[in-house]
Image (cartoon, rainbow, N blue to C red; front, top):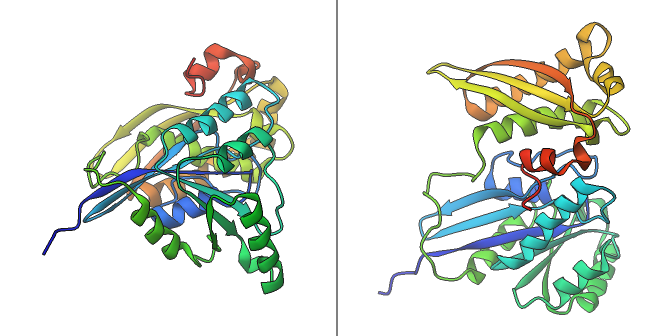
Length: 297
């Protein structure tokens, strides 16, 4: 009997903001690697999630939602999306039910002319009916004739297994790229930063969440406890006051909720200290963007 060859490859997830890319990635990986909120532009980096089996390793890359960039940070975010086309063995293009177009024509042309296998996933089908789904299937089949189309609900975990099976069929025979017990290529501090940023996205309005960057300055792990010191950076003094809130109540809530999530994620007691600093106009400063891992140039 011939042995099944080991398969491994890169599967990159692209689509407009808020279509459910991060939810799908987390459904595949089984961990909350990508933060999920209802605000656009939640994902700023490419986040690699690794799914291992006896004879496969799937390297999933969640990318920022496709937008027309308005400032330097957004341009850097779109560079992550462009790179997703370059190293993919399979492209997952996610649209939501009722969506009719991708926000950027050039990206759309890249998808329709891709030599890489494209799986087009119509997500959030739990929010519509059969007629809407039938119309969506026909529309996308016409728009992206090179794609295989799947109807899914990432949130309800419907259709996710079928997509995953198809991904494995399409992957090339290859040894594993990472150790089999590894979940991601990101360091622990990255998940601390993302967890705190998620809470800020949930609790603050207007431009505040988009003006914030988190930096974990200290991460000390003992046998029973992890001690973390994180700085919340804002662009202006007025934003600092809003983050802290009346008598520090808002910052306290962010810290408490982040600590609970981090204890679940790391499976250990967490001691978390958070501070707020002003870092003027960091979103338009190349040096600062590089420091936060956005600019490769």
